[in-house]
Image (cartoon, rainbow, N blue to C red; front, top):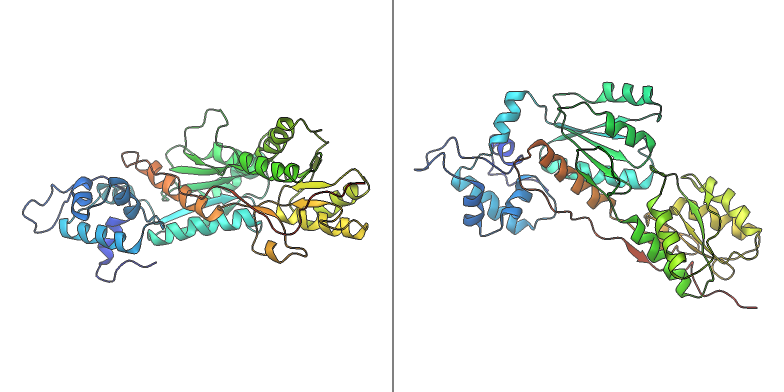
Length: 367
């Protein structure tokens, strides 16, 4: 979404960053006295809405955005952080540190960050974490994290990301997307997360409500010792007083799911499976079918993420939809706040996880 053509390049630079400041130039009678409250009052919106427009948040209606930008021009409002950044020599780019750009969740999250950064007039650079080894993480940070950059967003969904997050040099604004948002440690940086625990609970509960006596789980690798999806699965089984089967540790790929599915297919007691992502579910379904166990007639399968192709699996996959793009928007807003602590703390806007019921789940057959 482009800014209105009436804005000059200088307007773009000064509007997109920060939410505090006073007017410093212009011919208005009271030049130098305009504040963010003045802008909010002139546009007839809240301070939070002005903050969202200034920080380039995509989830603002075009009509509201135009009113706020018009008020900014009318009052000649100039956030002071733009001048501060220029004096500090900060570049007009944001760096995203991640271990893998091919997995759906990371790719969609990157899309959300890039969208928000582009609207705010910033470039997005990518730093690849090739390994979780401390030496490899340090090398990636040295290679990718410029102290003069506009900040760093770390996708800390795995061990490499967690270690990178904790190793970002002081003085560089940082925010992170994490697997679980309530892990207690010494971190002093803003984080955002989707509620994977509640999502896995709902997916497991769906299978139990259909009449399955228990639900098996093929897990994805976790950044912690207590995966959020694993926690939600176990909590639902405990609440239902159902047997908690042994977890099958999977990877990220359909091949990993296929290998897990071969083990599951050999156990005739297995009637329901929750997979840690949709790629694992694809492999599990293929292995079950090869073993003569039709989905969902013999075994029900639920995935996670709702990749664009999930609706076109054979059969279409029941899965949990996660708003990774919205999470990317939230991470960018958090980074803007980290770079300017005097600004208003942004609200989280990523949509809550949603169970999408399609054709891979049904009540179990009874003898």
